[in-house]
Picture 1 (spheres, rainbow, N blue to C red):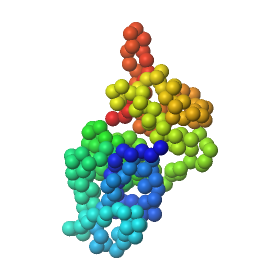
Picture 2 (picture 1 turned 180 degrees about the horizontal axis):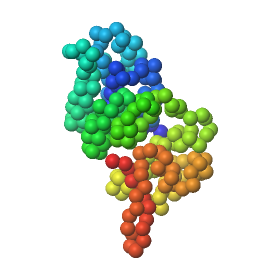
Picture 3 (picture 1 turned 180 degrees about the vertical axis):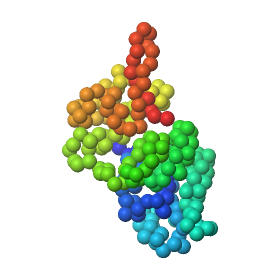
Picture 4 (picture 1 turned 30 degrees about the vertical axis):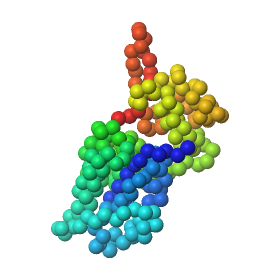
Length: 231
């Protein structure tokens, strides 16, 4: 089942590798539909040429970010300005920021506060201040797609179906109780068996999807755990 959430992929071309572009696209499209795709760099620099061919092949726009002073680039500023324009125009429901630079932490915090999905993609050296503001962060130097027929593979494959179940079970668009999900799971995943995903409970399964968290709420005299979409 395709995820049609409109998102923007914005790449810091000075801080990311063009060899990873197809992986970026695969990662982003598991969470949404990229309707805006841009790479930012100083295109007068020979080092930026390696981006051009792959960007053309995948329909990314090349956005100029000139270096006005030696050894000082403006790529991050150009990307942030565009991201804020896109955010305030309401053009998308999520972003995928591709960089390993902590300079984007404030941007991702602002996007998250607006209630939008925020994806991050970068190397394992990426500061946690940036990583932890993202709804989902993928490391470029770690395996993205698990081996077939493993619990991780099934969880990633069926993630859009679990998203659909959450949407139908939720009455407010933000939270859902597992008590109403049983029939929906059988409807969307006929062969549903939680052991396939190596999870003991549905609460644990949704936590592992990365975009959900478990919270406790008062229900009468008892405390109940429910699933909430991360903000």
